[in-house]
Amino acid sequence: MDRIENTEFSGERPLYETHDLYLENVRIGMGESALKETSNITAVKCLFEGKYPLWECKHFVLKDCLLGVGARSGLWYSSDCEITDTQIDAPKTFRRMKGIKLRNVWIPAGSETLWDCSDIDMQDCIIERADYIFMHCENIKIRNLKLSGNYGFQYAKNVEIHDSVLNSKDSFWESENVTIYDSTINGEYLGWYSKNLRLVRCHITETQPLCYCDNLVLEDCTFGPDADLAFEYCSLNATVKGHMVSIKNPTTGSITVDSVGEVIIDQNQKAPADCKITVLNK
Image (cartoon, rainbow, N blue to C red):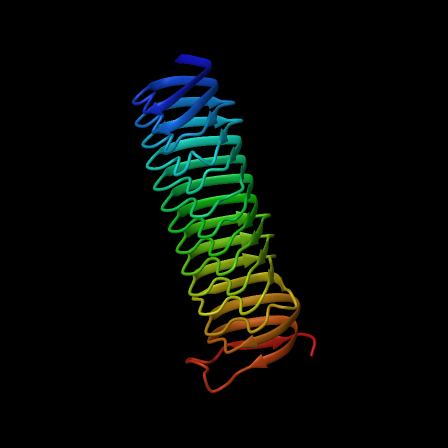
C-alpha cells in the first residue's frame, strides 16, 4: 500500500482513480472529487475541505478525520466504509451507499444525510440538525444514538435501535419492520402509517403518537404527560406501564395499560372496531 503523509492536495480530482493508498495528516483543500473512483483507501487524521471527496469509492476507512463544511455531498455512490472518531460538518453526507459502519462519529449538521443507503451499522454517534435523516434507508442497526432533527427514518425498512435518544417530529412515517429497545422517543406524530413497528421498554412523548399503524407492538412502554390521543386507527397489541393521558379510536387488537385519563371511542371509529382495552387501575 502506498503512503502519503504530511502534505496537501487541492483542485479537481488530485487523487482520481487511485487504489491501495494510506493517507495520514493530509489536507484535501478546495476543489472537487479528490478521491473519486478509488478503492482501498485509509485516511488517518486528515482534513477534507473540497466538494465530493469520496464518490464511487469501494472500501475506505476514515479515522480521526474532519470533513469540513466545504466537503458537502461527500460520500455518494460508495460502498463498504468504516468511519471512527470523526467529525462531519459537511451537509448531505452519505447517499446511495451500501455498507456503512460508524463508531463515535459526530455530525453537527445532519440535514438530508443518509438517504437511499443500506446496511448501516452505527454506535456511539451524535447527529444534530438532522431533518429527513435516514430517508429510504434499509437494513440499519443502531446503538447509543443521540439524534436531533425532524422527519427521521421516513420510509426506512428493517431497522433495529437500542439505547438511544431520538428527538424527531414525524419520525418513522411509513417505515416498515422497525424495532426499538430501551430508548426515548420525543416528537409529535410518531410512527404514523408505519407497518410492523415494535417498541420495547421505550418512553414516548408529545402529541398523537402511533396513529394509523399496521401491526403495532408495544412491550412495557411508558408515555409522557403530553402524549395524548394515541393509537387512532391502529391495529396493535400493547402493554403500557404507568399512566396514559388518552387513547383514541384504536381499530383492532388489544391494549393493557395501568391507568388512562380518557378513552375516546366516537362516531369516527373504523371497522372492525373490536380493540380490547384493559385498564388495570381504574
